[in-house]
Length: 113
Ligand SMILES: [Zn+2]
Image (tube, rainbow, N blue to C red; front, side, top):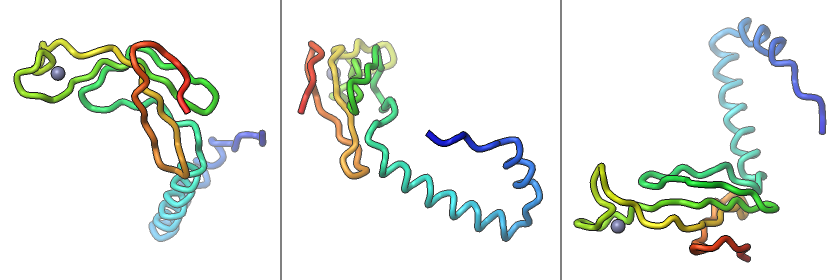
């Protein structure tokens, strides 16, 4: 691992940029973030809407999350503010060529291919 950059120094340098330079840096930084995200194989915990993460575990490059789910069906027990969510069930997440993949695992945690 390389030494982390000196953020205090970076910040003081950033304070001296003019608008054009700042805009250029902003665009370049966006491209860098995008590239790094695509290279990353270990997804960050996923906080999807209507889901409640009970537990998260990282096994190798996969992230396993125990989640309670809101299925979205009208009239289901999970509907509404006080609805009872389904599960919890385990889901696996990983990245494949930058794309986030998710897979249902089940009630018991096991490693998926
Ligand atoms: Zn439901």
